[in-house]
Length: 174
Image (cartoon, rainbow, N blue to C red; front, side):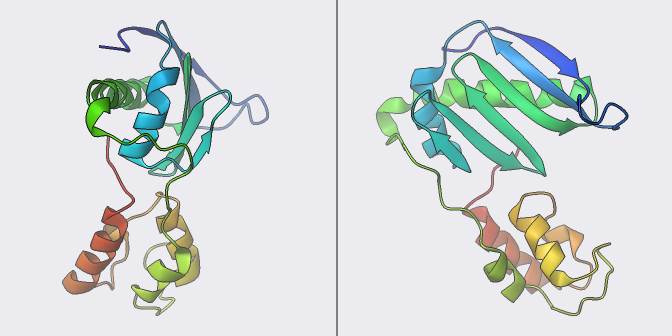
């Protein structure tokens, strides 16, 4: 096991001290830099930096960045959600490291869902039932991971399945 322990730091945004969301750092007691390219390949990072190594994921509207000795997560409800995400990432880091002989490391960002492709799969009614003013805004949120097929009420089962299938090549859950 590569990553065993960490210390969790929960804090409010300095630029928005009254915000309801919190952020967290997990200060890692072990260096995971060698696992980052394997994690990037396994999970499909939104951005990847070679030197110093880091990978950023967009998941459910959150940005999660893994550095050699720190993980940063934004827009969390509370400490329980932070712990859940960090524990999921700890499992993913260790799994990627343990299976590195079966994974081709990826030293660039993975492909991301395209807003226009998502829009093509939506009913394009601009009905606002999803809470957004247009299907384009909704498609953007889906591409960012903040919304999913289940969040579009007028989408029928076939449409939901088609959108889920398209997103399946880019998504992962914690």
